[in-house]
Image (cartoon, rainbow over the protein chains, first blue to last red):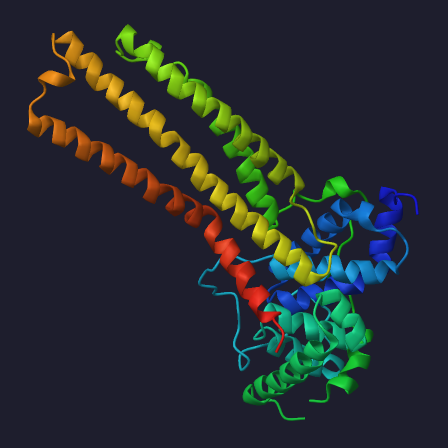
Length: 168
Length: 203
């Protein structure tokens, strides 16, 4: 496949911007950090563009670059006063938040913040509907390891959700 | 919470918060830790080159006796040759570190070990300067002695031991300073990478 032009690239990113949104929501807990990560992923995708050969789906290639960027995008350790406790969590600013439809999702995202970077990647791929085999290929670990870690991560996530006071 | 049921909400989630630019130039420069480290390394490379060239001018701007130039430049030439190797590999390193497309484990493993290797290269590059610094110090002391009509053989034993202790002290300081320098600038990032790699280990 020929190298993507800038406009073709941006069109593809627009089409798959849900990946940017979800990865950023899983890895960052404030709108500002999420916006920074969106930009960073787009930059890294553009810089890595020549490695996209067109043999795989664009979305599949984008998953890999987005997750690799998010995992290694370590923020400075700082005392953050812009994170909120579950009890205090309200409607996120500047986001079209529909409490009725999105409440579960909002609690889910808040709980995900407590996971480590690899656990976040596992949950992300699970939510995207990838098989254990596909997740293993993206993370570079065995299918068995994916199954074990995913089950453990789901249990951990349920525990965090429960401890946050949420009851379905 | 049933995560399988949550997938429908996940799949239909609004993405209004993502703003795709109409041109790439509208984005700010890359701010990823790896890009920052690469920028740091590029700046350091130029500083190292300048410092190395400046060391070649030391005899002209210090009060070294002309008879010590030979020994100084012999040490400087060795330093220069080995530095050329280090500066080449440093440059190649910061130009090449840019891998986001391999699978996560391979990607992080490569970055992690490249950084560890480069930190070790920094150490040995720093250690390489020790003989030159010692020759410079020795030549300075010798020049001062010559100016006062003396040489090393006329020094008192106490002064000789003091100079020896000073040389050992300078060496020890440089040996300790280099790892501290790399730990300060690169240690945190490599520790974080190692932590993620440990999380990817088979269970």
